[in-house]
Length: 468
Image 1: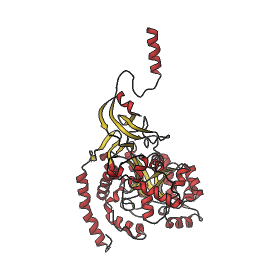
Image 2: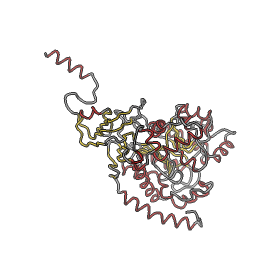
Image 3: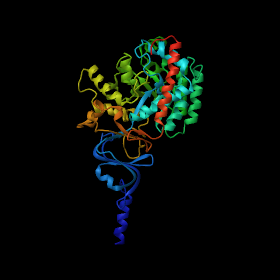
Image 4: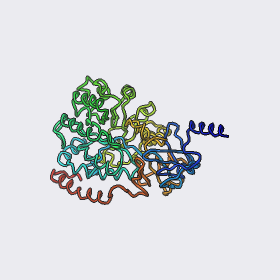
């Protein structure tokens, strides 16, 4: 009898179970009766599924039978709602929320309107107020991680830390005088200080953000590339976005494209995340894939600005690290990638003249694992798998526009609104429960943003600009 018991214990010791067979495993949070979209490599889906969270990580994912194995401190019975990885917004300028809806249809808007307005308005207060507002919007819309490029990124970092989200924050480097630096060199030094301050933060990844190839010199772009490798941090950049950029780089680089130019100067690598990537050809795509860089696909902003449609579907199908982004709230206007879903699917069908192109499951993949790969974070987030960080959202499936739900991917892409998100969890903590944000005072944040609009109005009027 003693021999048999020893053999049994040895077998149990070498066998992997989600929980011990003889007692319930203690976990911090249990989500049950869920339509679980894991977004793992096999796109595993569980009806009436279960996700168990312990600490800040996913402890178990499976079918309904799993629930009995756990003793949870808190249980969310979601009654069939969609449970999926938190959305990842691969490109934005979050603090520009306070400028949203200004001059939406002005030609050459960036140079004629946005840059001059920013020169008068950007302060630490503006950045903080705008970031707080954008964080609330994103969290409400299911975004748990985002990549940002702007000024005074240490102020953005404070707001991210307070609300509890995850973010890759890039300090802008540009050759013109801006609010927090007189030139690119000062921008690099600011970024280095920011990187040193936040390099060990569990949810914030500091980064360099050279604005674009044409707004920086070759020497600056090369130095940023070298420093990013030395510091092991990302580089966020606008790339292959406009004809202006294309023309200026062609003049600088003997007719080469922006992507080819970045490759030739040694700045195309696996630390880089290129936003937009509209004006790229097959050779560019080959270089992008070989480099291991990430791509942020911002459909709404690109078509609103009439700059074109990125060959994002081709890049996705060829294995490029590509995810969805919204761009800044003066460009795409919304900050939740749920607002991008339908446009991404439909516009790619249109430009490819193929109803079957860009099916919903690819869109959701680009919003989750694809976006995680674009930011080189796929080992930590982007799917619901054991051992990954517990960044999870729950999407209501009982609103009239979500009923019936035969295919959850189709429902998300063609029917869902950002406001359908019920719960948002980051790092194992519930930040929004039943559409109520728990970590910051949402009403106070909105009130401060509304009050700030008077400063914006006064500035616009003082400029003699009639566009409001």
